Length: 274
Image: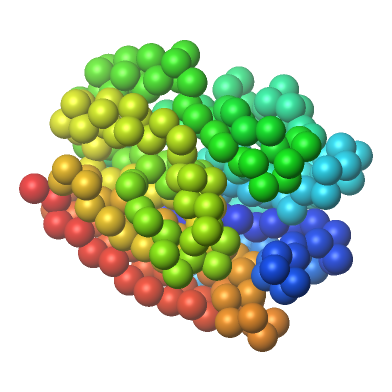
């Protein structure tokens, strides 16, 4: 089975995406890069499905502007000729509500699961518990009890090996060397990640977890589960105006998983299942 991930698109105004005085997210390139991604998927890669790990937009704390860019990004992905499964990211939720996004995406819920090719797939959401509407850096997030209960029940109801998607990191990573989160790792990782991992581990069914948000490529194994982080489509990763142009090809079978990050900041990870 082959599917493709795109994430952290950060479509937004051309003067946004700055951090530490650097336009680290090349927001003005997002539209063209998504269009090229769609073209590549339809003509060359032809995956069985696409997963968008969230951060459709680079929010500017203005509901009208954020809504416009969210709708635009959803529309940019519509020409894909294969199913698209989208998650939300922290930048999507500052001014937009869950109901806003469910309506635009035509989703009943922002967390859900599906089966494909002998595997079960889970897309998790989160709730912002930090004061991110006032302090833009305070993006603390958790998976709350109702979704944890759903996750437990969903895993209990499947007999298939399972892959989990989430925007925030679930592994206990120190984030040393990360441009965005080295000095504040608590914002690069889900706050109650241990509670989520406990459910994943107890099920005995989860084969891998894939996330975005941290804008780099990473693999960490905890208690037998590999946790992969893949980079943003628009990250100015060398601080010289070169975007990663990243998408991630995932090859999966009963023996293992391969993560192949394409673009200007490529890497490959491989993990054999026990």
